Image 1 (tube, helix red, strand yellow):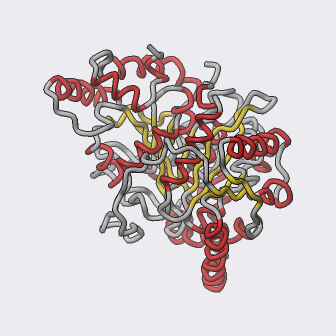
Image 2: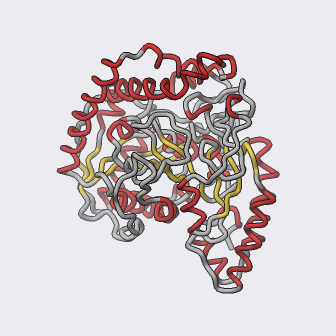
Image 3: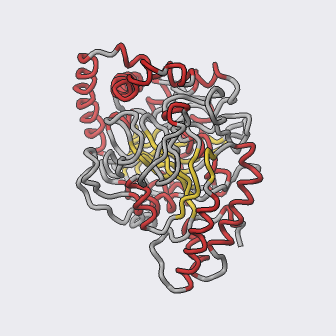
Length: 463
């Protein structure tokens, strides 16, 4: 049998059902791996091992009694530490909230528990999901399991690092400017930012009400679909929640790419932000693989990455300032340097800046929708570079904005990042697929077709 820590969600579920592996045995194997690797990777802020073991024992008894709560029954999940888990601190990786204990589960945690998931603990993040890899915070930054001298992306850094390293099979992250897809790209796994409003954000510490999303990180496309099935659905208590019924997102995974119309946004990595040669080569190979699988791949053009990034910055900084202004005025020294530097520009944004950005945003949404009328999915870059060294602040600051993720926070379209190869440095490079609103099943379909035609999902970090 595959080593327990590399099992997919569905493989684990089948192993539980056949009694070839028990929830307690599985959790024990993961805890041993965490003990071995996490002192180097720092994926966890808080490992809730005792509670997770109690939940594993209960799940085992329920399996013996043929009482299965759902497809994630007994499976441990990691949670980014901006998402409330009842009884645990939600620190946002910041001194500001060290004593902030959550009284209730976030809506998405409640849904995962209903599906049987076992919450393993809280994971590292960039401070308030906006800083960067920082060494002046209460907890150390997470590191990349492919090479711990490099960062794992962010801001859902512990989520990406832990899933890629086999510390847990799936995790939750948040995505305001690419914070699920960046660690997925840097760590060689799958990260999905669903359609805006598809997954409730109630109980998730906000960064930008207009741009925030919650999404899963997993090692396979099928696992992403399984997680989304458990997470998605209307929440009347979340004012941004979409009034839509969650559907079976895995229903098209086996249909392949034949007949799909794929719009390749080459402009993003060729002219807007010229990509590292290894990224460019990987993206061209993705296009060839899909064409060989029967898809029609055509070049399409969207508004420039610079304009998308400018709109994202104005909206994010304005809304984040409205949240953080009281603390920034009274406790500025309790923020890390990077988060403080990235939050303070919001103090200088005007109402005119914000309203103008929102008006232009509507036009950008229409531009993306126009292209998606003629194609089923978009293919484009995620990160333009492999991950930089975590101790090279200058190179990290240069490369972090070199990405094509923020456009789809501005527009709210579903977007998935996944591994598309290894750079000459041995670090992962990635591709991004984007779909129409609430067409996650189609995005997952093309991603699954690419996954089946390649072997990148079978590659694991050398740890």
